Image (cartoon, rainbow, N blue to C red; front, side, top):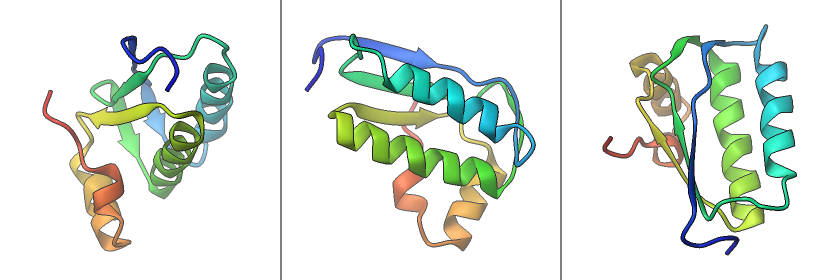
Length: 100
């Protein structure tokens, strides 16, 4: 695992929707391309103002990248409607929030 003792928190802001998710994904891809990736990343959703199913797809992509790169990934402060979408699609176990 990369930098097993290191941790980093990412905090996307504003809407995570079809209109904005491409920009956030590009930022996440730049982050994951770093040579000095931490061993653990927490994504804090407390500053996200709205979500739709594109946000759910983004979370799944982050999970795939983290697994491929050997990074422990957790999500905090997930909006209730995002959790409801995950439940609707039967993938809530993939996006379950951790305690803050």
